[in-house]
Length: 199
Image (tube, rainbow, N blue to C red; front, side, top):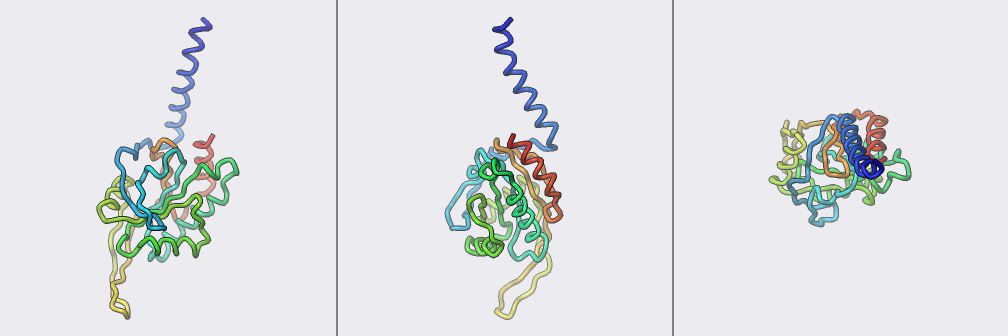
């Protein structure tokens, strides 16, 4: 009987934990089946989601010319980083991917971060070609539609983008577990979900 208990107990525990985690979160989507190539804020080529392996990740897709939603979403993620307990600070990654690669070069993304006092210890800002960007947008069901456009005094095309307002939570196994409204995020709720994954 003791031998049976020794083998069956770990199996029951694994099933219970897996089931409990599934019930806690609305999503269970594996995002690791394909990799996409991007450049980070230092112009280093990286593969996503390989760069977040074994990390709890908060991800948002933004563009730096956004006047409202994207800065608010990024700010909320920054606030969440500051709220993390010490035991989780090195377990969580914050990823920003631009869906406007024509304007959002690595250097533009780096400045976007720096003026917000974001350091790159736990943050990654990514930009890539249209194909890789489109594939990740489809994976996370993010929509981005060009809106009004005009030309500035230098003759450069300026345009705005109507887009999905979202922060996504990815677990350590590379599974998308939950989506939240980015600009008006409930930080306490997201923090509790991060803690749930980190325990």
